[in-house]
Image (cartoon, rainbow, N blue to C red; front, top):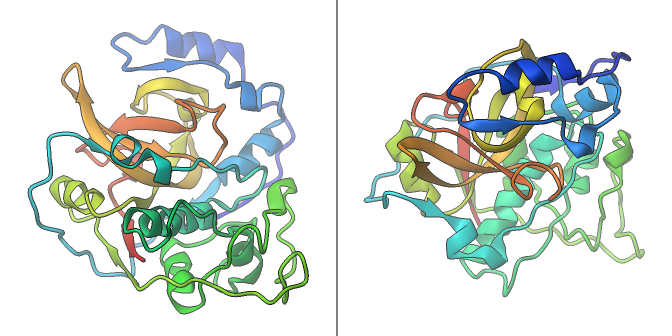
Length: 287
């Protein structure tokens, strides 16, 4: 998946669309105008959404992870100390947050780090020449960058692109010291069906992506299913678990819009039918 930004100036949210969503019968999720986006222009909101999307066939061969995954599982419950929600700001850098995040998660889960380290999303945003900084990127190229080049800690190179500026690749840490990067050992595309994704999730969190429709930008809580509105583009996020509520199966997904959005920075989405393409391309990163 690749995404790049456009410049649209009209207001994004409107109450008529919200009221229409509230009156759809049998909704499994609650709509509202998120406080994070309240009063923002169309262009400001779309800087988070990355509206123009080109879906591509994943270049990495899909691998079926075998095992006996439990009926429900979430790293938020198993290793909550390893889960951190970040904030990409108004920069189309979700491809970096959704790759660096799982690297940090899985280093914590595997105890390669003594605790949850925040690694630098800014470094790939500014330094990954195969991607396009705040103008979007490809999941596979983000994975390859972390394997071949790696990234330092956020303490070394902190995030500065929340205003939409990609920035230049730094040669030194913020404090002037030398940059030392941590690389992943490998990665695999594990989106080979629901069972394979469930099994993969018991090994670590996964980078994935989905098509954003207009109604998703009104998500407050619950199990999201697309109900209304046109495609707005693509967004890269992180699978952290799965479960079932009132007979409805769901994935637990971490976003990079801060903890005030959605369910404390997370959302749930319908599981098992490739809702909005979220089961098409996902990567397990090995620390």
